[in-house]
Image (cartoon, rainbow, N blue to C red; front, side, top):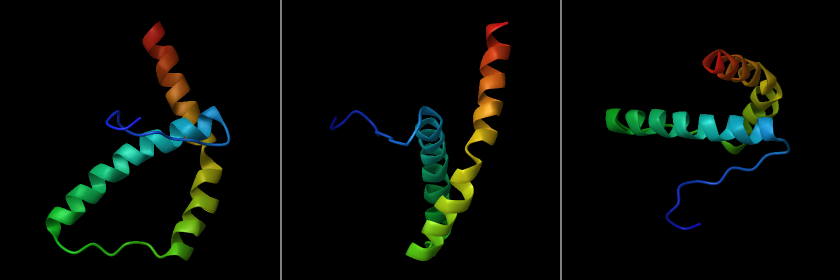
Length: 74
């Protein structure tokens, strides 16, 4: 899929969508941070902790996105 954007995977559709949405947002934040100066990245342990704690909340944004999609269909 070279040249066609990004590919996300997850253990469920919810997780794959969550990762896709936040990959784009985080890329924007990283680009903005890099324009301000040197960026301090998370360590491997910090990254693992984020995955364990933040991705456990996938259902929260999923429910919001689902509600927004239903509202647009009305």
